[in-house]
Image (cartoon, rainbow, N blue to C red):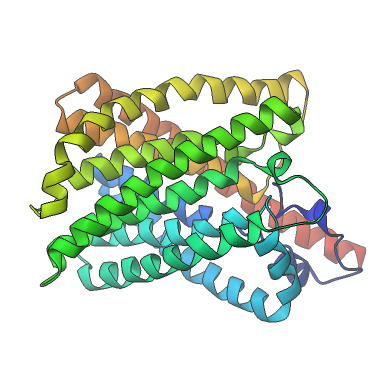
Length: 359
């Protein structure tokens, strides 16, 4: 999925740069906030507070800007947005709105902005509930002559990421809640469990898609990295639930969840060489051009989440090797984030320049 699958619909003739970008705005662009936010969280965990706060400001600004652009697009290009909501290749990208909201809430909560964090998590919960039923319904009932299984891709894992991100958000706001701590604990366990189940289901669908329809180098796009990030966030969510205040549901599942996080982390580590190798196969062996697309942010988030998961697991279970791996992954995430940011700025500057010179 590149610049919101522009091959799906030709760009309008002679549009302004802004209108063209707005009409083709990727449904998954909140991955920008997700990636920036999780790297900020990782830097905070590592004690690099100055850099962490700089990225927090960037995450907050991009979050607000993206909301303006999404609402503007819904008004100005409603048909384009409706097509995205019904398209199996793109619809699940909208779950980045949920995950981006939760990641920002978690980082703001760490800075002591409890009220703002609670408001954002509440918004994320509402969006998760609506999207969690409406989007799959739209996708699974799509009947346009193309088999849905052949259109499954890495963005479907964002469905699981959104659920796990809400579990983390709920765990963060529990101390700020004067009432309803038991309900928050129940919802945290519920969303964690749903996220794990969704991951398993999507993983089966992706595997079936590859077995039945194959995958070309061009089709192996950045969102497939979310297969690792979705499991890494389950590690972080599980660790947060284990550390939550005592409630009936948390107490009933604490031992079960504690027994899964190390196994999930190991699976993430195993996936990384596969994803790196697939990238070499795509860009080096088959020479698919490495150009900026909004989905590049889908690589930043998984690496950053793996870093945070490793640091948390290493500290909680006294595993210094795992924590060291986490710090190494955090440096890699920061480098990938910087590369993606520079590529994004360069992309839009060149786009504006080419439009200006062609006028």
